[in-house]
Image (cartoon, rainbow, N blue to C red; front, top):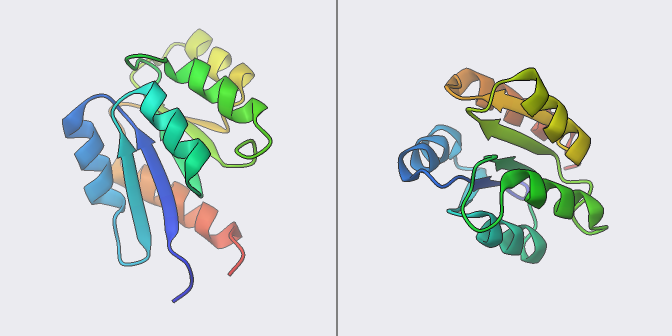
Amino acid sequence: MGTPFRILVVEDEPVIRELVRSMLSENDVVVETAANGAEGLKLARTQSFDLILLDVVLPQLDGITVCRMLKADANTTKIPLHMLTAKAKKSDVEVAMKAGADGYIHKPFRGAELMDLVSALRAKKPA
């Protein structure tokens, strides 16, 4: 096996955080979690990730601000970043995409939706 596929989940709701972790954790997938925007930003900047799943409504720093900061940073700009949020209005999606998000997943989400995203990104990752 090669290096594991590493995912950062930034989500303030413990139940959702653990649900996503359990859905995506496999032998070669490592899921790290953060409970607020500041913690998520710090982890993203100090560790290496292949995907970031980011809620919009977060304590300390909201997800849109975190997204903008990560996409403006040369060290994190290329990490695929998908918003994972209950904010489902068209205007919410537009704000996230303008901030640099690569995708937008609405809550409630399906496990298959997350697995498909991970599979697609893993297929693109160099061995």
